[in-house]
Length: 280
Ligand code: AMP
Image (cartoon, rainbow, N blue to C red):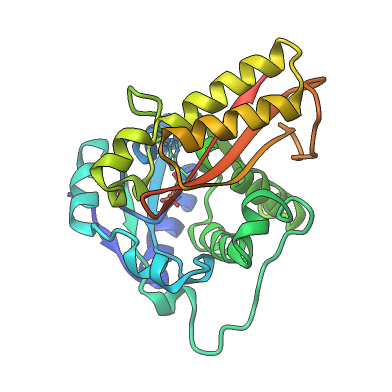
């Protein structure tokens, strides 16, 4: 089994050795409860680097609800077992004080990109993400970092943050891994009651139909209304957002005149699911 490292100093000792040997380092930041989506990032990191670090840290600062933080699945032992065949170099599971020492007082915050979509519905979420991710970039000294397109807004925000702060890391976005029925893999799927799990692919189905309608030149307001109806009819309780945005920069769009992304968040069985797909 791969070594689990829990302190900055132990991590730094490994990283220094690799850097001295001229080896490249890839990092895959996660909150654990690993699934095939995470493992696809690990494989991408392995293919592109001499050394790979997987980080597992359930970051309290990016949860905007105490119950969501409390209910978030924590499965460290199983995570280590799932990683074993991938032979990563280190699993970094920092003790909380290694990320947020006493007196911690700094927030890394990206404007603009964080203002709509998940940012509008989860106050403080992206500040929590950029604060922890900037620390993980600096602590690991990684040359490349692998993020899923599943969290498309997060991928854009983290890319901007690294660029703006001159953190010498290349942020690489990897495709969303899905179940056969179209549901995007997510650690939160573990929290879905069985009826909700069966109905959950309705979100991606409605989004795919809306994207096809948009590409065929259909009216966005009508297509959106139809998609929202379909999502609710599938068994979702609420659609939080369903928006067409520019693939690069996330500006709102009313028709597909350049590469676009359709992004959604919706609630089912008391669980908030997000998804996004390319349009054009
Ligand atoms: P999380 O543990 O949910 O914070 O996710 C850690 C990383 O895995 C993030 O970069 C996510 O975008 C990525 N990820 C989560 N689900 C998937 C998926 N279904 N396909 C690809 N990447 C994913």
